[in-house]
Image 1 (cartoon, rainbow, N blue to C red):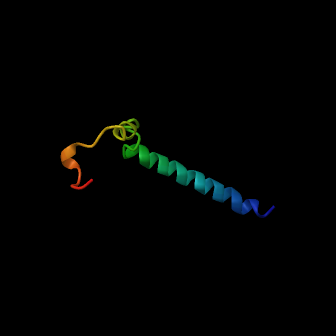
Image 2 (image 1 turned 135 degrees about the vertical axis):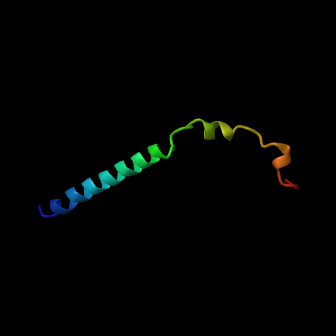
Image 3 (image 1 turned 180 degrees about the vertical axis):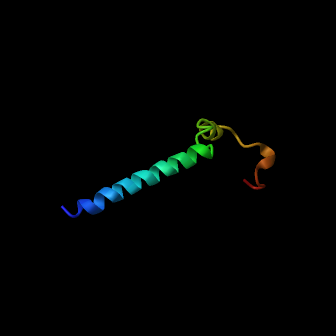
Length: 54
């Protein structure tokens, strides 16, 4: 039963830490352009940006 005295505060702390991380990510616009990276991978690189010899 004494293990609950450790696990419950630990679970609350980890949940609060996850909530803070989520709030930070929303405030720093991490979820603004969800489709941008998925679409950018499909586009070809311009020829002048490529390194010689590739």
